[in-house]
Image (cartoon, rainbow, N blue to C red; front, side):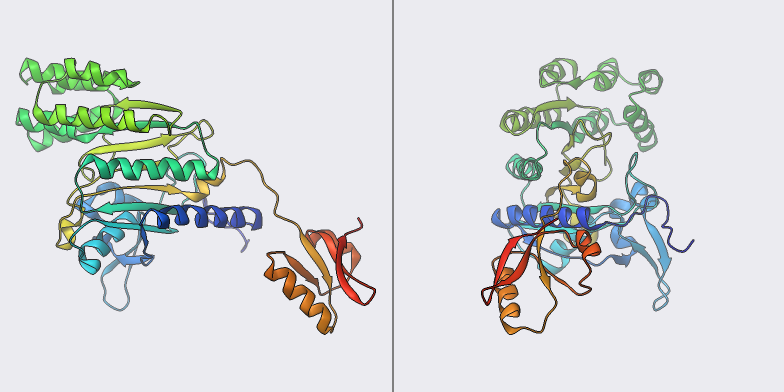
Length: 385
């Protein structure tokens, strides 16, 4: 059956496509008014350009093929963020703060979650050239404002900070192999496995690492962490950032959670990470974080922070909304009719010319009014059902 599509690949039909297009325009306008410049990278690049820090996760998610012109391996992008980092580092070459935004399709070898498409429509924003919490807060606010603009409110914002785990590992002088094992156990919140892995470390470090999987919940977790974790300057600085972010963002989110064992993108992110959840979705509906020096692979290291979301996933959380109905117009060689149609369209009306002229097909045109000739003038009247 030639009309069948691959698994987790779907067409967007008119209701969804028009609604998503409206959301796309609204979010881009929000970003434009906030000083973000739009970029549009290509769907296809050399593989190594798309795998920042040789990310194994990104490698597994990427479709690959061989370029018949160069013989090199190409990949269909699984994430637009590395491409925007390349543009900032290699093409724009600004010295101060750069704000960039984007929207486009990405492709995944496997769906990112239950009932998710393998062709997300990713929209996001990235801020380069500033390493302070002010830029983290800016992109987090924009992310929450964009969701509210779509009508998605009462969300749960999860905050984490990879700097906490990284500071503990570095201060303990833990070897890379053990670090990887600790990371995997931490992601699973597997306390028994962690207990075995840290058994050879100093007691203070054992206590701190074993506490991390338990340090999740509301904002009160930050106070618990100050007591439970080893007092290293990097740890305290990370906790201060989380506390400040939670205080600043509490009016934009329905609730805020803290999870100090959340190490998503550990080899990619360098500071605060965040995710937004909604009761209508099993998966996070928006993700982001700080990833300083992301442009190093492109020859220019820059601090950076940003967020991204999938418009197709977000559309599924919105209430059903019928397309606006139009005005039915007959097909006729009539200068006055053409002028009436043009004027209505200039006013923003949908005018559908009925090429077939068969009444039984009228419902398919989605019109509730019609142009009729009365007293020598074309006027709009309610359409008879």
